[in-house]
Image (cartoon, rainbow over all chains, first blue to last red; front, side, top):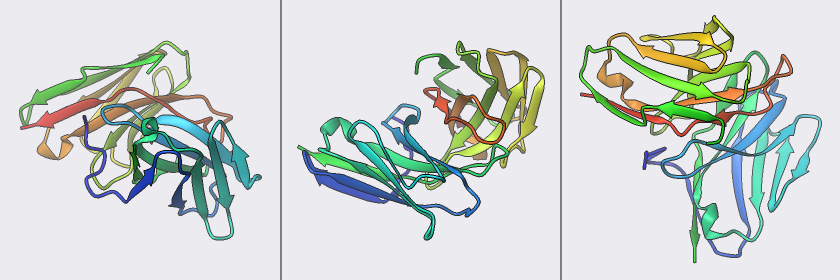
Length: 111
Length: 115
């Protein structure tokens, strides 16, 4: 499949453990944040989003935390499964179609 | 990816030749985008469209042009391909509240190699 990043930060977790993937965003005016998952050979897939008026949002097995004070975003995946192995990246939006995508973190899940 | 298809999936072309990539959506979304993805970089916006015949440049638009003659189709053209345009190209669609999107739906990508 396509190489989405040869030198990405990597996180390796045991199946069943929780995973935490971090992202530092750049623009303090950004007001909308999204996490995407990208599997090898596929396009990025929307996982969960959060707006700046919230600091936590939960989905199915995923939670996003937003800390605007330090411009930090995290994605928590509960009970990580082999199918969660992928590259995860965050995106920030501050309006005007200026979406900034992070380079991503590669998650390996060990069976 | 449901509702959005890109063609071709893979292409090898020679330096100096024109290349056109196609994106087709069935979601009737107003906004369409072309991004490129390279190792060590996040997705970078090439061009986007906010309606039929309404397009604008992104951060890496040099050497690329786009056209949108119908809501469902967004074409990306490399007028004269160069090796620096070897990349994976993604089309995306979204809706918007006028200030931010509601997130993107991406196509499966086109891997373009310029030799």
